[in-house]
Each structure stands twice: as structure tokens, then as C-alpha cells.
Image (cartoon, rainbow, N blue to C red; front, side):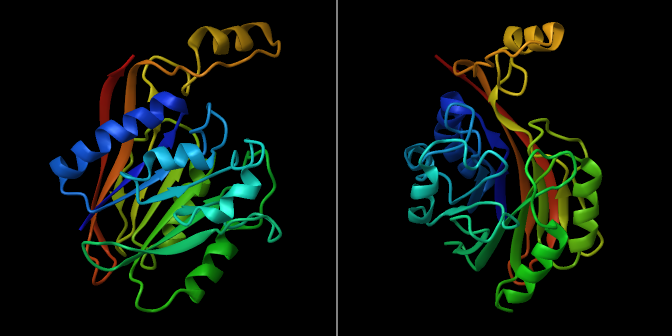
Length: 263
């Protein structure tokens, strides 16, 4: 089996790239299941039910991160979106769910768990290691394929998580930094790992934002509006995981990058 995990989707251009490129990738690479981090899909900050609906025909499950509540009113929408999981280690009173079990039409169930890191992150969250440990204990023994989206800043925290979960999950894939890392590996216990899947957004940008806006902020030290680049060359970064759905063990993980021109 092959599943595709798509890095942070940024804005309208990122959504359009997903709608256009994912069907092609499914055919080309033999992908049966697609997961995408969509926490920047609405104007570069947060998400909305409408934005996710635009991509639901080509994406099976969406994950979130520290911008989950950036869009006003999304807290009232999240419980009506069955194929979305937000960080599981947020406070228990927050709406939404941190993991879910989803049916892969090609065979077997897939558990998707979303976690948020603690190191260098702006929002406080419970310990992701303790949280995921408790989640794994609650999953039915019949669920063998388990993917963890670890939305975190520090590569050390992400690497540690992959070793912590080796032999217990199919893959740990990092998000949040918007920069695809060159460290795809399968751990000895069958856990595929990549510190960051990258970004689905403008190729000529600073993490999806206008270059001039970001440079101005860094050089002046003054608050500045960081506009999202919505058109031009948009890149889709992702990780392709090959796994055995009977055992849940991964055999390969490789980076994927595709580009498309959007006007």
C-alpha cells in the first residue's frame, strides 16, 4: 500500500495545487490514501469548513496545528467535519478530536493522530509523548496502520518521537516549518520518518508569504503584514509512504515535490 502525506497547505494557491495535482499523483504513484496538513489553507492562517470542502474530493483526511483556531468561528464548525483531526494534546475542553480511524478503500483501517510539539511553540500543550502513548493504548488491536502528524518546531523533538514510536506506528511525519527535510528513513521497527514534509504554497516566497514583506519585517524590526502569495509557481511537497497494511510496518518513505503554474 502507498499513502501520501502532504505538507502544510498555504492559502488559495495551495488549495488549487492540491485539487489539481493529487489526482495525477494518485494515478502516477499508485496512492490509495491521502492525508494533508491544512492548518494554513484559509488565507495562510487557520482553516474553514469551506476551504476543506474544496479539497475533500481528493484528500481523505486533514490534520491541523498551532493555527487551528485562527479563523473566527471555526470552533463552531470543527465538530461537523468528520475527516479532520486537530492536535490531540490541546486542552480537553477544546472542540474537535485529536485522532480518528478511517477506512482505506484499498484495504484496512488507518488511524491518523495529530500532535503538537512543545519546544519553541507559541501555544502550550500537554506532553505529546504521554498523549500519543495513551491514544495507542486505546486503539483497537485490529488497527495496524497508524500515521502521526507531529506539528512541531524542533527537529530534535520530532526525531525523538520517531524513536519513541518505532515498532508501534507506521509513520511519524513532521509539519510546521514549511521546509521539506532530507532525512526520510525507515526506523528498524518499521516506522517511516521525515522531520518535515514541507509546504504546499508559492515556490518564490518565504514560507508561502511575499518575499518583500518578510524581508521588510526582518530588516526593519517593525510589525508588517505578511501577504500570502496565491499565484505563480506553486509547489506541492509531500512524503510517500509504502507500507504493509497487514502488519502496519513501513518499507519505504520518499520525498515528493511537484510544481504547477496558477494564475
